[in-house]
Image (cartoon, rainbow, N blue to C red; front, side):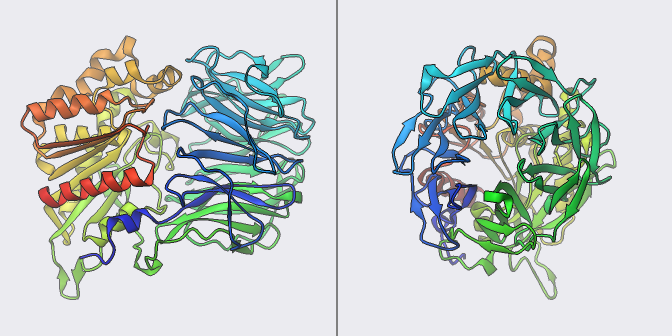
Length: 603
């Protein structure tokens, strides 16, 4: 029996997403109140000041480069139609956009802090345009500087403030980079290419004559590269086996941090550009946890803030001295009184799938799953499947995962084919007609579990969210004999209705991954779990948010209704104030308490 109940584990706090003010004050997001709000600190481990007091989640914060004011974003009830707000030093909040039917995606401050840029689908819900707005005006006063015809985002102002870096996503694995001259309206295309190529994490170089980014245009893995404004690409750093996930560059100093993804853990490299493609490397930061990201450079780039996490390290903001690598933990998000030494770290394992391909996974065993004389063979397992599918399960902190481990469940987290982090070829192994090969990987993972001496093969649960919810439902319909129960969180039950009803701005990107309604409808119907619901034998729990713009709540309603009609034990909870996921702490406690009771009954 666990010493702490579920609510304690779900009350473990997180602090992340930081930004430095010109005077060195650090703003960050922290979910102490149950949803992420803005807080600030002026010194490490000081008493934080809460800056916002809303019922909805604040999504980001970015301080002005010149004033003690910041911009933050927030949607309503998880509908993802984010609005932008300015918070002054005196605590007064100004609504900058005020168009609740449109999405607004932050693009950064101008160097003088007088203007900011963003992308929005105000004009046409299906596409994003580029806007520039003065810091002290609102709503209709934003200047439309480029009409888009796809998924555009802004990567920041050039050092002289005259140009914008613009990215266009054709799919999760295919992007283009442009430079927009604000006054003339001229858009220059820097990355013409054939096929699918990633150009991501783009930042202006210090002279404004080039962009630094990561790309897989010349490799199976993502490489750090310099892209000149004439379109010439030079590789700066590369790794034959692992991705360089991203780069954060201070365009005034040329200092940068880039991250290398090694089996889901990451390694940060800090340095300074000494030439267009040369880097003087500084000592490696002394950070715990194994995962760090979300870099924010401080004034004069002498230090940077970064969000740090790990399976035994709940998320907190650390500040690193660039030249020495020495770090201090600034925030003190608590573990709700649960000793850190009780948290369990996973092992990285691999198993062979149906075609001989090796599939990586994280595997965590609870304390007591084996003893000196050998394994007991009675450990239930939760197979926890990530979403995306263009994502990767990495060993970040999860209170829910630690709770399940404390209750005696093992947790198995496969990175099936199609996951990122293992090279370009691996990510495309589940495209369109190969979709169900990733479900076969789940079958192979369960076979591996069956061979593990600690595992009870009759008590294996499939659980996942978003695309992972589809994987749960597909696993239950394709291999019904393998599962003791399924937990579907905001999952896809029917690819046709999902694509018909998802947000207009998302449809083209999703069709690039799953197949199009026009040309692939018959295939999409054939792989939709709803059309094979009669094969489900295992009890099913369905969670969803009523405001979900990505996977509309109708997906939950139809699978719950039809599975119930087939005689399957089904429980369903829909939260009226949630979107694509269950984010508010009180809702998470209600939802996962019900899930635990469901698993106690059936598993």
